[in-house]
Image (cartoon, rainbow, N blue to C red; front, side, top):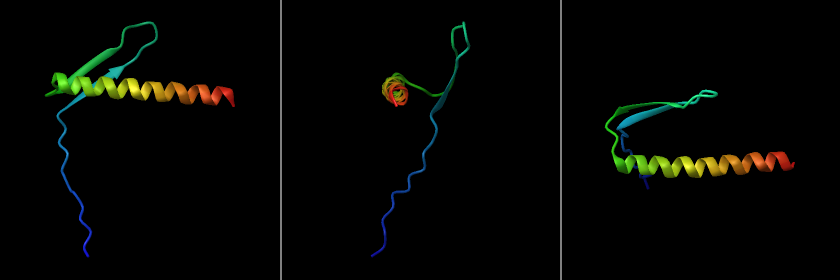
Length: 63
């Protein structure tokens, strides 16, 4: 029986680049077609990723 694979070409809607500098506000560049719903998904992903990163740092310090 042949294997069924979903091949969907992903198209980039836009790009957000954030650069952090010591003692300054971050520099943020937006490109493409980004809407409010995309920003909500981005915010959720960033906060979830930050929490996981912080938890991993604390685990490393305990060891």
